[in-house]
Length: 184
Image 1 (cartoon, rainbow, N blue to C red):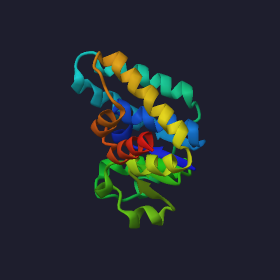
Image 2: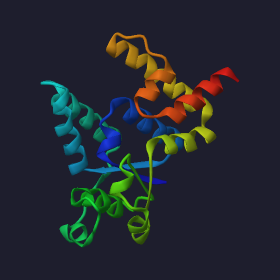
Image 3: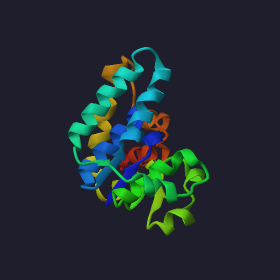
């Protein structure tokens, strides 16, 4: 499956790391655009003076990991599109240009299903996507979440557990599923 990732799911580090790790587990193909990545870099300025530089490093690593993931399209494609928020037309254009099946986003209201269906697309939130993949790749997802939690502990100097880390990353259903799986 081909998935176009909106800025809002790439910028939070834990969410992005779970999503990208899951792409490797599931064999699905991630896509984004230069503008989506640029929005991420600009948004990272909010975390302080090193935020943008850190984001640009992470973006470079993402591009190296998936060198064919960047969607490119003619301006005429974006010009013919309509969305409630004009500033999101580039996301829809990137999804169309990459022949994506789904747009992975937290912004449901910005991507009406009827409009997306006209373009042969749908949308999904990250927690739902990860839950679907968890059903088929439970062991690998547990390993991914465990490794990510260990990395978060090392980088933050805090003692994180998988559940609270994923809940903080706006992935509550996955956190709950992993907790149930650990107790089974």
